[in-house]
Length: 129
Image 1 (cartoon, helix red, strand yellow):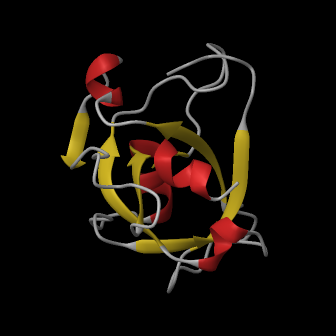
Image 2: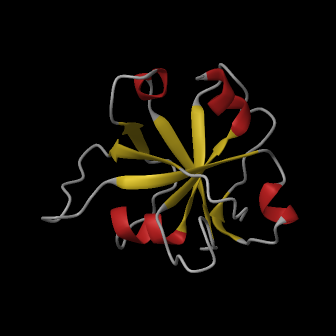
Image 3: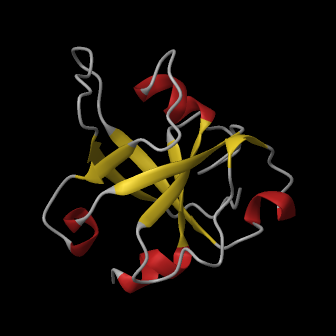
């Protein structure tokens, strides 16, 4: 993953999920384009990659990393599950669908391991600005 020092993180809400006491629902976002995982040689463990059809105006989709999948959906398949972004901004106005699970990778720095990361389609993220 790109290690730039910059980060985008948000709290999320997952329908039907009650976090254990003290657990934050904070996730880190990484906006990507189709073919990202092949380019950085990060295997998809389940589901599918972001695709060109995931454009502005289409339903929001994400690929989550395995840490996020295990942390928020223990013992279950999170593909086709939905969540929303907490808050009142444009990105919080519609549900986001999980379409894939990627192997964990570095995110913010080489010293940080592992974080709950979701990869959203940059075409959709840019439409929310």
